[in-house]
Length: 304
Image 1: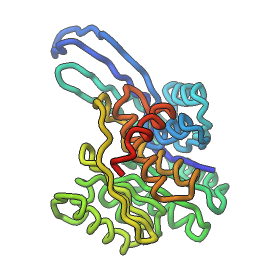
Image 2: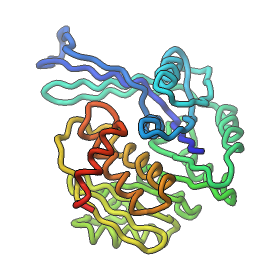
Image 3: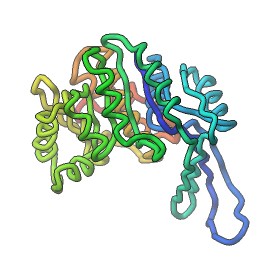
C-alpha cells in the first residue's frame, strides 16, 4: 500500500485576469479550484496512473471538508486528521501578465493531532511505501520528517522524501528509499554550482554516502538523473513539449517513479515513468493522466 503525507493541504484557487491592476476591481476570465499540497498531488497522479494510495495529513474547517470532498470525487482514498483550531488554507494563484501567488497559513496543529498521525502510521507494514513531501508548517516541529523516519525505522517501509535543505539532509541517516532534490537544491546542499549531469551524479553519490538509497534529481528543461542503490546511473534529456503548467511536475515525477518501480521492480523503468509523468503534467493544464504518460513514453524512448 502507498501512503502520502501532506501536513498543510490547501484549496488551490487559480484565477486568470486580463491586465491585472492593483487598487481597482478586476474581473476573472477563468477560474479553477483544486485540492493542493505535494503529497496530495502524488496521490492524485497515482490514481490517474491506476494505483491506489491513501492521503494522510491534517484538515480543518469548511475548506478542509472541501479538500476531502474533491479528493473523494477523484477516487483518492483519504484518512485525514480533523483539526479543531483554524481552517485549511486557500492558496491563490493569479495569472495575468505576471503570476502572483498568495498562500494561506493553515490550521494550528496540536501535539494531540501529531500523536494521532503516529497512530495512523502504526498501521504501515513491511514493504508499504510512505511519501513525505513539501514543507513543514511553523506550528509543527521542524524535525517532523526525521522524527517520522526514526519512529518507523526497522519496519522495512520504503520512505520517499521530497523536501529541501535541512528537511532533506536530516533524514539521510535513516536511509530513505528515494529522495528527489532538483539540481539547484542539490547545489545548495553542498554550496556549489551544479553545471551538468556529471556534477549531479557526483553530488548525488555524496548523498548516498550520507544514507540515501536512491537519488532522483530533476533538472527542468535539462532532463533528469537517477543514481541507484545498486550503483546504476541513468541520465535523460527532457521530453519535448509545450510547457503549460509547472505546478505539480516534481510531485508527478515522484508518483511516476513509485508507480513504475512497484509495477516493474526495475529502476530504469521507474526512472522512465518518473521523467515522463513529470513532463506530462508540465505539458498539461492539470495533473498527468495515464494516456498522456503512455503517449510520452512511446515517443520519448530515445532520450533515455
